[in-house]
Figure: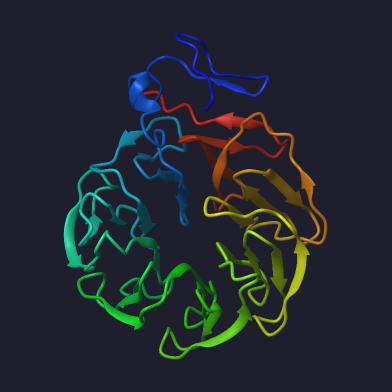
Length: 324
């Protein structure tokens, strides 16, 4: 865990991160309580990169100030068009599908997802970018789909763990999911499925990402391999052996899509400038990066022990201040 030095400016030195007392408007024990100030997810709104969310906080000014969400979420998703609408799920309210209409400051139940925490968990929420009334829930038992904005859900894959969903950003009828059987592909919004890649050594894929410019290119990562398909899943090529565990991530630069980043919670951050053919490890001053994402400006966001950072064009790591 990064160290914290009281009443100091933000300094990156020797692998330690020093934050000023009261960062994010919270006491120190609140910053590093549990999974950190923001958990292990960081995302920005596709149409307004100044809006940044973690599991527990939101910034509407690019990270200058953060506000605490109305409740901490285990899974979060954003409405693709309406910036103020946030969807979420929390173990503290396991049967409720939650929605906020004020940037996450208050949440209300809008649907029932019938989750039994003894044997089930919501792994991911994904909103169809072309039809936001269509929402998918990947759970450790079933894959659900809603056609009414989250009010009702129906299973489209049953009795099977679904860990990750990726929707083609150009044609949202095309979906890839990571399941116990392997990578499944649907071309009709989940009505029918075909296996396009079997799991390696019985291990599920933990991450699937489309190239936003060339959507026939799909990257996947698991404990055993990093792979790419350049023909929408017909064939696959293994291009690395990064340990992409449950906390790993893949991100493709939306403006320079030859640039691909891979994060392994244990192995660190890797960068490719040739569409994933070759990777170099990034000398990072932070240790336990668990989530990365590009915003629409091509800036890389990531989170380390719950503390959000941004990487600028020069490769410098900039803590998002969060001064209230």
